Length: 615
Image (cartoon, rainbow, N blue to C red; front, side):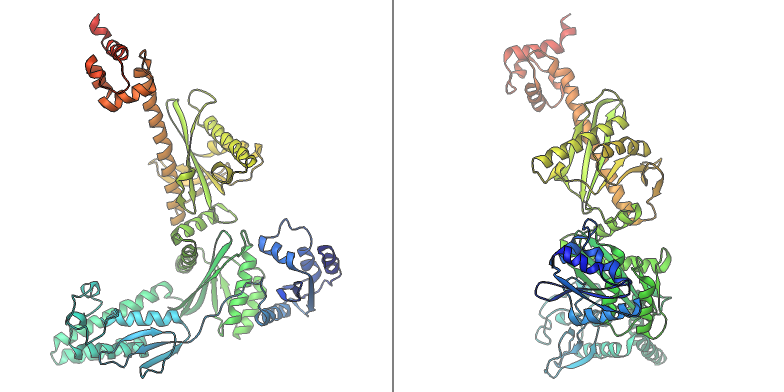
């Protein structure tokens, strides 16, 4: 079917709830969705595509037909949608890979036993603990046990490698007893392995109780050395467990979900808590997610896919933003759970800290896939939310004016790409339109010239430098600078977010402003750090250009005023003598040693600086 035929078919659909099933030319199901009113929802796909994300445009381009199933309610449609997606796995739905296979903790059958994390259970006469559903939990449990009981994490084999090398760093930071250097006996090592196994089997609470009983018994028997060793182990167990509990001490069971996007890619992170302890962490990297994809619908689709794969639903799910169909999805999750559950959207306090940690995990995973750092992506996400931007800004341009009482009036433009200085796109401007000091007029001239260059570059088919529009413009200054530049954007028909960066009386960044009001940035730590870095960088760059210009102007007002001395000879004289003072003191014969100087030029320089003496 053509798009026109598909639209005609969609206009004949009933205004009833149901599930629609998009198919391609081969009859394969490529997308499944649900609707409160089928006619309204499906017909949107085959109308104007101006408001469609790229992913939707691509999907519609491959649709050749669609089916639909009527339901008695929107809730029934939601349940059916989740079931059909799980069954057919359509290409254009968000599909999550469920990698929750079983994993194990292995205790080797060697004389000097080793504890390791394994994804598979082998037939090797070793002891296996498990199976565990969470690989993240099992890995962390092994790491904790090895640290608490000072067991080696290296690949050395004992007793073969005993006393054959110096201890590594772990020995000196008290995380290994260094059997490789003969620092521990086999009996003591074996006792530590047994204690570590008990810790893995019984958990921290029972381990602390057992160790406390042993410590008290050792103290009663006046075995103070053993009592001290047990005390240190109790401290280590508590320290490890408290490190896990501190982030959610008041929440017994909950999931935390956050979304980060960068360009066309996205990452959902999930932190899972039980008994006030973080017990699982998952992240889902979604390629070709769609630039500018609607976050509310994306969150709704992810939640539906994620809990279709999981056997349990917690009583509380913490989210960074509400999903589309919030009440409907909450009802569906409550039915899956068998009890009421709720969504929460914290803005401060302990829950907000947990959510920030989840967002940072998503940012780190997404940043790794793009080859940069997670904190940069988190800062851009914070900045986008602070300024009300649709997506984190990839390219940020910032401008500053520099002059000295109106002289040598210049401007600097710096570019930050993905939160980092992008120096190949830095530009410098010399103010040409007027003389004197007028920062507002200067800023207006600079942005006008910048966007004139943009249209020239586009006409020439260029794609770098001025040919790329920024996602955000930050001006060093307040409302006046913003008001001076806003007409420039309107003149060129450009819709680019524009803000000024405001400093306090100690010259530190305190807020950003548009023409209406100021937005404090001090409460958003990472966004504040990024804006401060941008403001310092653009100021450094602009004032550096101003100093260079003023230095050249100073040379021009003295050396280049001498007959026969141009810019090249002036530069050669300064390179040779280093300072103007030494040029003044030089004799004619000394001046002749400078490259490019002849006798008439040397005599002119000498005469220029000795006019008063000759009189």
